[in-house]
Image 1 (cartoon, rainbow, N blue to C red):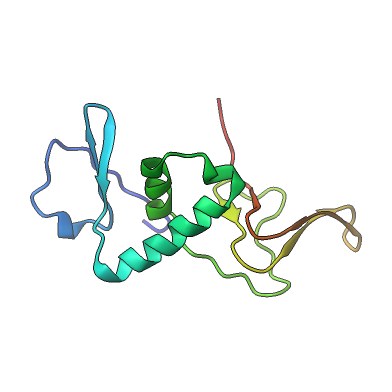
Image 2: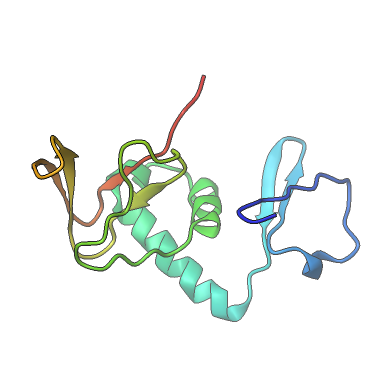
Length: 131
């Protein structure tokens, strides 16, 4: 099944190496997450540093930021690349870590207005919340 995430909930797992990620929850508290190797540790630290520097995440406690960093992935956009547009499935948020981007409102096929300039530390995206 392409573009599918499978989530397994069990009291214990015999072979954690068979899974790409795991989260331990004990008494409602999130414990250690995933399988962190020495190579991924420096990447995780880089993500944590980026999250600490972003105002929107700066006040999160250490454990929450670590879980967020572990679940995030790097995304590189080329100049002029469209990341998301109106009508796309709402499924992501982007934290600008380096460089800059612009958000546009497409008025007509040939005309668009710049809404905001996005600089490092700013979060934008098409993340949706349903209540």
